[in-house]
Length: 290
Image (cartoon, rainbow, N blue to C red; front, side, top):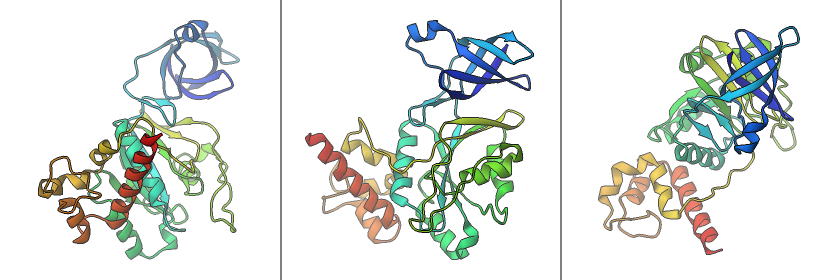
């Protein structure tokens, strides 16, 4: 029987197949082959006990994508959430976009909790990423605003929902699938951050060939195996202005005659995006020293 791994905890894998969820163990051959089943894997299982819904995973079917962080498979796209209030963590958001671009997974940015800020503020946030190559949405789980558009972009795909704790991922999941009953946690009034309510990656079927993957909230992202000179390739808004750089191979940091820097000064590229780029560039340079 074919199915999809929707959750993995302590060596047990929960496989959704033909409307039921089977608790499975992976055969020892995967360990010998140094292959670990991932949430999102399409698998073939043998049912050992139909009544108790127990089985074994016999085969992991070919993956069309595999993310390193979170460690999941067969994701078609990611939807990363940023809270409109308190102010979005643009540094963390930009790090996530680079991480997804490196793994060649398209990303949708959703600014949630828009009921807490003016419409002009949301438009300002959207403007920052208008040329980033990402689709941009806004939502309010409190008012259930924007949910139709979210359902539209999710239909027929496996989407990983991501973002820092407290941005409303679990609340969105509850609206999309009321049966989820996810712990929405609480926002600390002192530090204005959410508790980490999701501790493992889990997939929820919400429609025909439509799956949502909730992933643990993150508070930091670090770049590994990324050269400073490679960083600019993950900023799509730079491409239009690079022909105006005086020197080939311009890194858009210390060079004087730089089309990208001029575009920032002219307001064509968001200052926050460029400032984070410079910060990441120096971070990667410092890491290379050691």
